[in-house]
Amino acid sequence: MTLFSADLFRNFGLGFMAGAVMLGAATIGDWAPQLESPAQAAAPLEAPAPSAEFLIEPLEISE
Image (cartoon, rainbow, N blue to C red):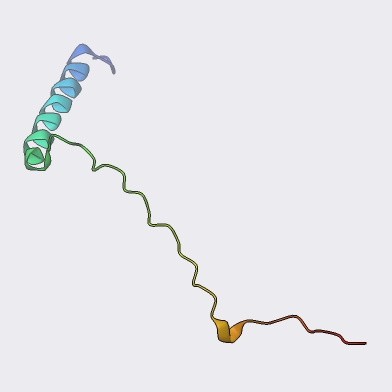
């Protein structure tokens, strides 16, 4: 008996295929024609407008 015999590889291959079929059958309801939704651009940030009551005017220096 050898460690890496043809039976071992065949059994792993059959197990992999059976698992793939079971996974596909379990998730077939989630499949859609479009895999991902299209990208949505983020809304640009809007800075608040300055208020007149907080306006700082420069000092006039009279000599």
